[in-house]
Image (cartoon, rainbow, N blue to C red):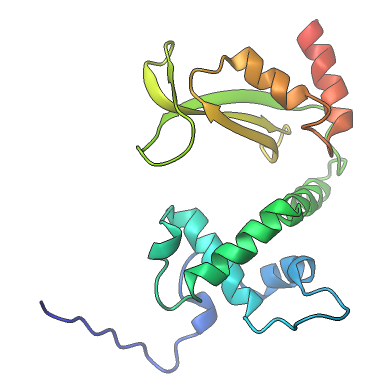
Length: 195
């Protein structure tokens, strides 16, 4: 089997290897939210910008964690940080920060007063996760229930089996326990649903 060799020019800017890589301005916004907290404990030895670039590459391409290109950090490091940020709410806080910033730049109130809900059934692979059959769309797989503001910026997402009716998905989104940050939106949505 032939071995392929790739030559990377020395003058190439490593920070823009892929379209999904963060530029300096984007990293300046996100970086402080993923920086290591002050205090005692083992100091971070990995390049956090490299971790973010790998996470965004994986989100953009949909590749498996173990299939990340070798010019990124080891997939186990990237997966560790992604799992940590997902569990402690860091990714949710970054999304909220970016949404507020975009709404302010568009001349809107940082917090939306109206939200839009919709769902989409999609086919899924045989690997992991719950699946079901959506009889209306004739699709076996999963269903995404999505709540966005009027600009289309994501407020909340629920992924479940495709057999879950839209009304049940909407009920889950409107549950106070699920929607922690968007209580003002939920009140408006509930009023619209009840009318």
